[in-house]
Image (cartoon, rainbow, N blue to C red; front, side):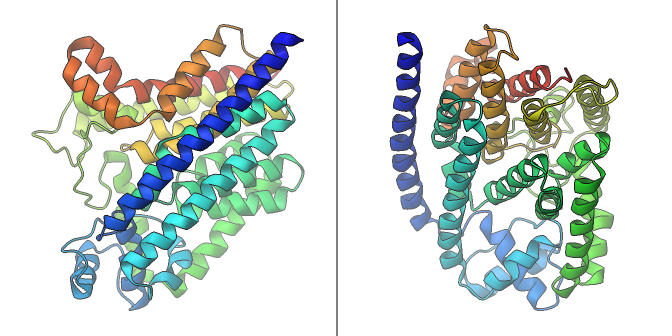
Length: 416
């Protein structure tokens, strides 16, 4: 009893420490954001909304860059490659000046991060106070969260929608849950994998609501993104993702901060000199084959075709395994994307608390959580200094954390 009380005290002390770390990290990120005049990745969404509001094609990077130069904010803008319904949320922000919109999005993103932590802790509470404490700890300690804020990314609001939708559907509110997850999939394509999990499980009602919501949002998006631009996205931009072509994005696949599986194939079969703006044919084939195998193994291992009983804990781990796949499968997985590991880390902690995982996995979980939450730059710099095998292992530590979460969630998500 004393040991259990001490363990709880240690966990809640870690929550306090993580909260202090988070406040300091976010304050530092806010100071950085004040000096970012070009709004980083947020500029792509902003000028996509500006171009779309004037009847142009938001997927035409030349039009985005021209709009930025007309504003006097940037000489060029990274291409926009999100689904057309995404601009339904950003269209009202087109009239806001770029830097003001960027800073306001920083605040929105932090609110989404805190809401995500609260939701994960609330879901974890049923598995014990310690698990809820660990959920808060990993969320508050995750350095990828302030990275999202500074980069002006949208991963956190989308992940919040996906987690809330999936959780509500599992608690019987399948219409609302399906609608929320459908909205998440129309903001970014990755959450569509969660809808695919429902399809494999023959969960027809939430699946139908997710698909129906996606269709409705697609129709509504015609008000801001014209037919020609929609055809541009679905006919050219979306198919390019599988070979690493993100609508002409000029950031290299071989960037040291890329933590995806295709990045490993890109290193093995590079297309030419750096930067690698698209996968080589061999790396493309290897990525597609490995992706298909990962999807098949995940579907089979979690018992989709084997029967058995699936409870809330197993289903949560299945969600975590699929979330890890959304990081492994894309050609590009940068630091800000790693927030998608949070649901899987929490689900694996709950599984260990309920003896769904063997005792030795506690150490694997803590090491994985530490690596996932750690800042990337020190790992990168140390890897460069050390070199050799040790340097390679450090450089790929985040990739290893993704694989570890996927494996833990698979093991805990089996049908019983």
